[in-house]
Image (cartoon, rainbow, N blue to C red):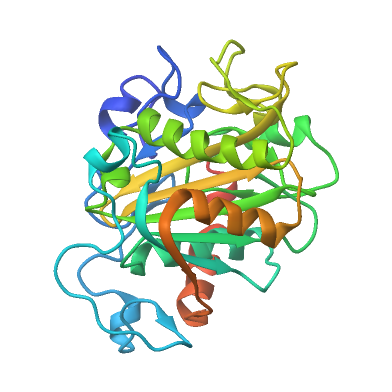
Length: 308
């Protein structure tokens, strides 16, 4: 951010370190609660707070091809804390699942996640593919170091923390959780652990033998070479699954990458089954205007990519 240094970064941005004594660009837990509107970056601020672009054009909330009733009152689909603390075994009462049918280039993939977070009204699992060979790097990661670690890919900077991820052939998902859900209100380490405990059960159902990492290796750099606490690893310590998070006014965005295994849809369905008491698949009508605005102004911008 403009005029800032890594000293005191956790205090100013609300970073939640992924490992003890690790903050700033090496963390894979980000919180933007200290930024009231929009984004602050090395190029200044882009604000979308009081009058959003969507509402100027009369669009509000996610729209589905399958019509559904307007929700009022508390956020739907969210488990109460006691349910999973005392053997509930799931995180959500209800979950919407979107198997995104369109492979997307890096900037559009990141813009889609942000648009979903802006508009989601209940927990949503998005499973998607990449268009082309892409690597992603975390909000505070160094682009020069990312490029030196991996060749033959195009780069996109994520809105979440963490290091560098190679998306060539991985299984990629995002969990979008509105503010008010228990998972969105937890500290980063706790929510990270819960999601990965369920993902561990998914990989075991495929015949794998994953376990939760204790984070013995140092974090940062190439994510799949350096597990942090509660990443999934095999018996040799090789990383199988990792993720990064961002918290903000709208809720929690959890972006995850998993080594390939069973068929894309089957793994997604099993994951949804283990995440929630009930889930439904929805085909979302995307507001392409807003997504493209996010691509142009942020995720496809060289200023955004080269901010670190």
